[in-house]
Image 1 (cartoon, rainbow, N blue to C red):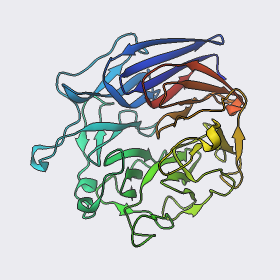
Image 2 (spheres, helix red, strand yellow):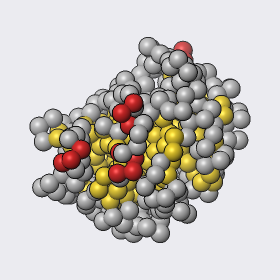
Image 3 (cartoon, rainbow, N blue to C red):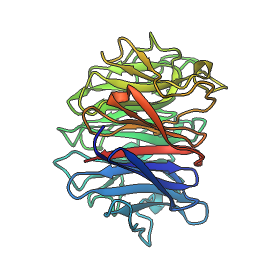
Image 4 (cartoon, rainbow, N blue to C red):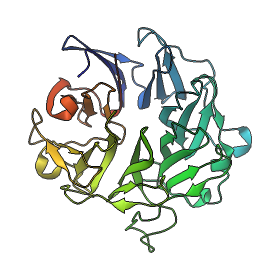
Length: 359
């Protein structure tokens, strides 16, 4: 694990920050108290900037930033993400904040509820609706998942800024190769057991997808029942769930340096949503999902909570630090690519989002 780490912890009632220095963790907060924090991002392209999607029940959704690692925060007077008036729609929540490619340091994408993609050209100060996705003829037939109808994943190709893949609940995966002017549904091979056609063109309840910058044509996907991999730029998918104790879960992330290494957190389903047998385990594959190993050192049994879609992340150290937060307000840090774990926070509100930066 790197010597210094900053972990952003978004919860249903505010933001906490966990600093690790010389092996010790210090947790501060709440910052932005009582705001729902569904999206956090650490933009390290240049001077570090923290971005937080904060939703107040009184003031609505906004994006708050910090340029001093959380010592102070800047919230614009006018919320930077809003639907144009002609759409007749109001933004309900920001679900994802994703810095763009390294050679386009001003670009930041945001996924929102209802399902929509927004793009910033000034590093998150202002955003514009990506009309190509909003005007897609499928949009009127997208349905909300249990948590809402939202674009919750945005992955920009690190080498081609015109290529972006998004995922939404419940609509499935869509991709563009022309900068967002046109979008294609990309769900071939992903099962939607709850629909009359179990392999529809769109309508899958995708929970999260992940991409490694060194293998941008490969994607990993955690579905509402199903774990998949694509090797052709998200055009088609095949199951990699064999070896997992359950094919249900929410998060999936890749290792920062090893593109064959991927992490997930399986849950029993549909109604219980506990780890199988109450055993808290992060599952790691080192061969792109062909085999899986449950990581247990330092993790508890009799754990009856869940980990949501953006509450699992890695830092960029080598070996990597791996982190997850639970709906019961606990946060764990895993050192040495997740071989060993320690609890670094407890009794927080419901953890919704995590991102880490190391130096």
